[in-house]
Length: 453
Ligand SMILES: Cc1cc2nc3c(=O)[nH]c(=O)nc-3n(C[C@H](O)[C@H](O)[C@H](O)COP(=O)(O)OP(=O)(O)OC[C@H]3O[C@@H](n4cnc5c(N)ncnc54)[C@H](O)[C@@H]3O)c2cc1C
Image (cartoon, rainbow, N blue to C red; front, side, top):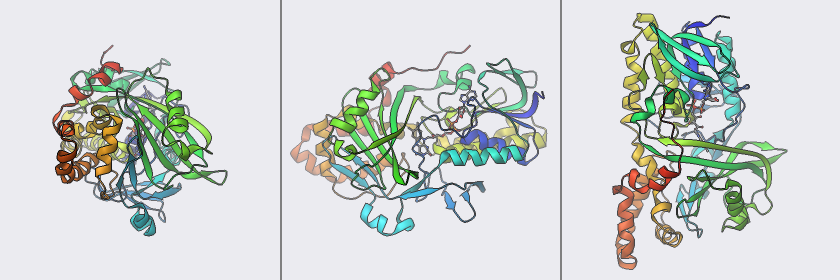
């Protein structure tokens, strides 16, 4: 078996598959190593929304061209094959525990405009990964599935990758695309400099026969505040099950020790939102657990480049993952062509990471999405939500939500000051308190991955 390659990619998610494809297109010898047996099988829960077809994310405006069967990234200058289904959705609704709603997007007006008015669309991630894998195989990428990477180390001028099965691979470069709980980041000591903010655990079901107020929207109820708070999440799937519309229904929590199945029952059977699920039918169970770190600032060590969620704060989204995979793969191609087999050779990737990720996306803003249910009680959230009556812009970028909420809040502050002055301190905390302070119980309850072997 051949064991030496120009590039070894660890992890066949959106980032790894894109990196392997772009490197193989330029003729590099590439090995792609994946822990799952079936690359296209989605074992970890995902909302499968395209972030975003209606605005910008990381400076990119993603385009879906169903005729050419492509997802295009015109600013970055590449396209990926996608021949699966999509379904438009038209707004993002966040609910308080008592059912008060803040709307990002006017559902009636947007859905009346059809595709023109969509917030974005959901897609079939399994079909997307299957298509990318097919392209990689056609381009000669050596794909090793069912292989768990357990160690990555500098060896001579290159890098050695060791799998649990005993297989060893050697690469001039390695792209670590092993996702949010990256083992490679851990064993290489990359998490030591990162802030740790806790662990997010979720369970959910794909369900049919729901009775939602606006079926083709993203619904996010703050089911309960407190420590820990619980967040619901409902999003349409791109496909039907036995001729019926299907949704992902899930709950998210920041205390991994809680009984998530009971929380799910509380949300769907006893909460204010239970009528939505009265006749609902569960199709498939899914779940996920992930750590929340601040991003890796400099995603390179010993000829290993970190791409996608492996170096992000929580999630890059599919779009951020493929963009970083594409940039990382391209940088390795240049390094090999120029014969600069060091950090200097892949400088274009490190520059992109800094400009498009670290400087563009402030992870503190992302973490602030968690603040309200921790800082405020149920009744206070109901009150704050009831004050914001205007429809907010149709956004899907999670980094834009706190900003849009902040702007809306400023307009209602004079009324809050008159009616509930005691709430003003808490509202100020949304923008001024650091995550280490607000999330301290979350941090204590979480499982971090900082040790090295
Ligand atoms: C609940 C939830 C909802 C989400 N909703 C959306 C959404 O609506 N839209 C969106 O765009 N994004 C969403 N995301 C985020 C999205 O799933 C990720 O950002 C994206 O998949 C990241 O791609 P990646 O390639 O970096 O990592 P991953 O998709 O995590 O891929 C990593 C790959 O590496 C493999 N791997 C891991 N460890 C090893 C190892 N040791 N050896 C070998 N292989 C390994 C894994 O099996 C996996 O195949 C969601 C995530 C969650 C948790």
